[in-house]
Image 1 (cartoon, rainbow, N blue to C red):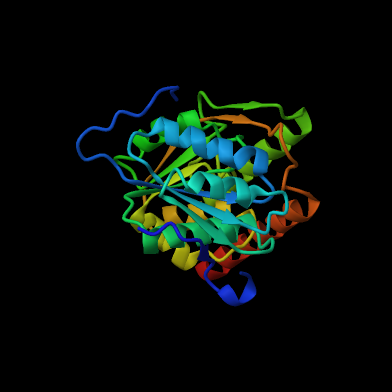
Image 2 (image 1 turned 90 degrees about the vertical axis):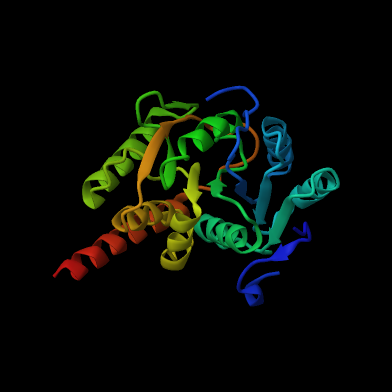
Length: 265
């Protein structure tokens, strides 16, 4: 398995437990997809933490959208120590949905993983919860880390943002009949078949990818499980979710709902 940097598909557009996971016979092989954009102070520390949690080194796939703060320099230094770190340099900001999709596609094409994890680089997704998420993925197709199932928590959000998130997730649950309480955080574990279906059928580039990928997987009959997580607002760096991204998410969801309704007519 090479650790050479890889270009993103479509190269023409851009170059819960705090313990080490015990690995029994038949352990699941992992690829972990981490999108980055100016995460120098976060990404390298996250990689070190992940490497400390798993005795068998996982494949870590960094999908970078043109960081200018030295993020890739800090990751390059770690690649001298850990041979299974791969870097997809996209050169510009194309959206978190497309970054996750490109990372998953790379994992499917270039690794022999059984499960693909997606998570944020900013420590809002606690890496110490990874062992629990992975263990929960042994008998289902998709595990969704959830702030809103029993046991899930959010730290550091003001009441207004919390309310908007609750309303948005509640609307997705009702409109798309998912049976899930969480749709909008990207802390997930997919098996290969589920990942292949999503990569082939979900084209959203922004945050709407999160909702549509769940809906498509569930509609195809894949089994999902929510696992409570502790979501912590970032303390280092700036959030990538601005007004433009929120508006794009809203209109993408409305368009998706309209497409589903037309297919039923």
